[in-house]
Amino acid sequence: MAKKAGETTMGGEAGQRPSGQSAARIPLEKRIGATLKRRRTAAKLTLAEVGAGAGVSSAMLSRIENGAATASLDSLERICEALGITMAELFQETDQQTGMAQLIRKADQMEVVRVGTKHGHTYRLLSYDRGPRKIFEPFFIEMDKESKSWPRFSHPGTEFIYMLQGRMEYRFGDDTYVLDPGDAFTFAGNVVHGPERILDERAVFLSIIIYAE
Image 1 (cartoon, rainbow, N blue to C red):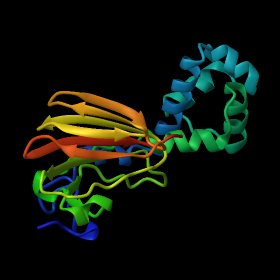
Image 2 (cartoon, rainbow, N blue to C red):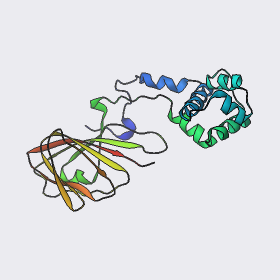
Image 3 (cartoon, one colour):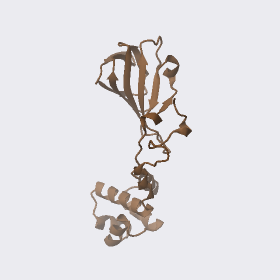
Image 4 (cartoon, one colour):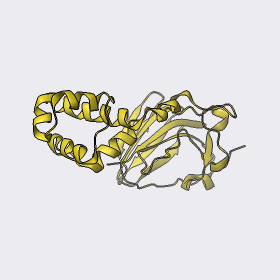
């Protein structure tokens, strides 16, 4: 039986917490420092170059990057300016880089209602994004030849389909494509698309929607 969203156990066994969540307990100053260092090295800047631009010594900047010292908001703002980023970008990236992991056991995967549900198609959501912004949605989808009509979709972002079982004719705009097991199909989500017909008794595939920034 499909679980309601509020009943879903994250991490599988009831009462267990995914080990990846321990990263959320990493002190904030260490996470901020790691983000600053990642940004600096990506920009190919030295400690001395960023420190000079921010009015902070190389030694102090190194301590901040390693989480050994806590920078004041004023210092952080100057460091961000030297790196060419805003404070908002710093904290957003720091929040996203918590090292979280999510394991959802098969029994806990939530069956969701989409346009095709009323046609007998089954959609299982494989990951639950709990952040402020949806980044991607992965679905495990099953449908059979009994369906007499097929849903059409249009949404932001990019969609990726990987066929696991059966053959399916899939419509994308004015074109149709025959997808065989093992085939991978990537397309723009804003173009009207959807299954045209099932060529075998049953089709099973993964659909992953990646939303644009």
